[in-house]
Amino acid sequence: MNVNSYDFLDIFKDLTSEQRLVQETTRKFVKEEYQPLIEDAFERGVFPSHIPKRLGELGLLGSTLTGYGCAGLDSISYGLIMKELERGDSGLRSFASVQGALVMYPLFTFGSDAQKEKWLPQLASGSAIGCFGLTEPNFGSNPAGMLTTATRKKNSWVLHGSKTWITSATVADVAVVWAKTEDGIRGFLVEKGTPGFSTAEITRKLSLRASVTGSLFFDQCEIPLENLLPKTEGLKSALMCLNQARFGIAWGALGAGEDCLEEATSYSRDRIMFDRPLSSFQLVQAKLAKMATDLSLGNLAAFQLARLKDNGSLHHSAVSMAKQNNVKISLETARTARDILGANGISLEYRSMRHACNLESVYTYEGTNDIHTLIVGQQVTGTAAYQ
Image (cartoon, rainbow, N blue to C red):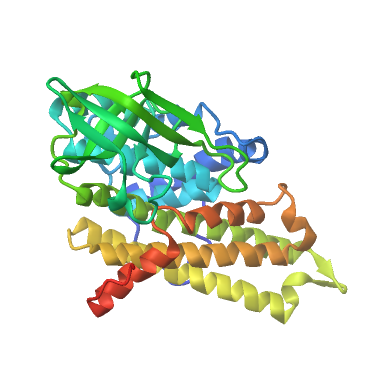
């Protein structure tokens, strides 16, 4: 299986046999099991309910973690998984990214032994689903301004507030929720069915339609003391989780972009215009060449992130740079591919418009494009310019 047909810079030639197997296995799953479902799922606005367990069976959830049924893979393997899943659809990668980076990672990093033993095996197998509650209606790019509170009582914590734009909100068995306490922002586990905890699905979306998105509400929601993630220390703990997710996005977005390039290239070869293949026109070749160049450079950035991550020297500003750049070029690639496809490009029979719609959300979530630009700007100048 040639899974890297546009590898102009030989970025993938030195993959280990394990890394190649991970990529090929994920590609095969997406091609044979997910792609036949995505047109209908996107049109109807649903996430196929059997997919979490299939991802678990393949070892694709929380795959860089060790123990508890997790695969213990390196960061390049994880990046390749994210890339292949997003080749299928951003909603598919979003689910796996939230499950692994935003639910399993904080449990593994900040949780108690009892919390890890209870939840990580279930989450790794896909038999339980998690969500990550940080964003609030009035505090998206400024999570430090959150209004959700957790008040300590004698034998419990009481949460009050709300979160919104939460992936997997209405299907989650457990939510990792961030709230203000007397000692600062801490993380908590809130289980489905807890009195005072409710959810609502966000519908009528024009993007990420094959993904569950919703809101979380806490109305004097009382949880046991042991539901506190004991090692969380302020907002930096939540941002550590986001950094894991952004790393996956920097890889994943490239999968959507490459799928658009492949579709546009194939279409332009077959489409006859003025008695010639569309691919023979200079303007079309210039567009395809620009797409291939941008994606090749994006892959270089993603690979370097993974190397830095595995040797422990990855700085969060580098993750912001790659997330911002790779999502931007993939979105531009999707738009250009749709243009090459002409009127056919707006049909769900083709993939580029769906990817473009999804990437509009990826461009915004896990830190907007502008916020990531300012993170890089702060690293360059030493001055924060968020206000």
